[in-house]
Image (cartoon, rainbow, N blue to C red; front, top):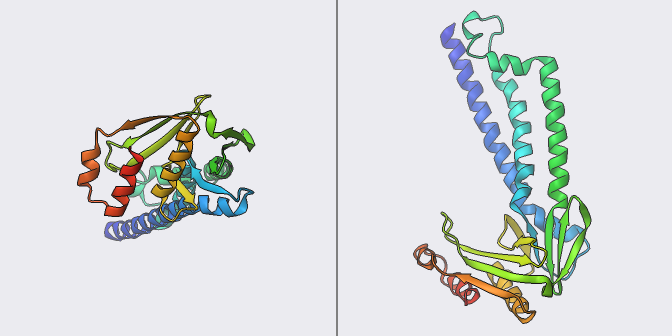
Length: 237
């Protein structure tokens, strides 16, 4: 009996792991295609970049939470509810499977997921040929800035595991725009060329540029494509 219980639990756990992996794939796919979708659904036609900040990953968390809740049943239904030996081991699962508690959890998850979905689709930045528009849940129409509103450009090579280019704009009201953000869609086939194009326009508009090449050696050792490395170094000049 105990062997059957462990066998069923093992099968349920595999199902659980599979669902979590699938949820992550779905979540990440949604996030990385979201900027592309926004670019074709919204009114900006002359954009250089559509940018999604890292906070937009909340939709991925919401999706994973949903899948986690649904996958609990895959494990619970493999357990004999009246088996004395597994009452202590699976107490948490039994608690979550309680109908009243589960309904409350589902209500909270639905609320958080809808909130996450709203925040994700209303939080993005657009850089056009002559302006920067910041969209937030509190400003659905977007706050528009001119290039002259960019006080500083901070760019360089990150010191984390990526060791790649970062490019951030600091506006005069202290708003930060991370151009190398979680997800982007650009009219340029190579995004670093888009950044270089934007960089030149911002410099002409009077923006101050801060360049940090302290970790350039990490970038050189990362074995990036030669054309890409050349384009990045043009930005860091």
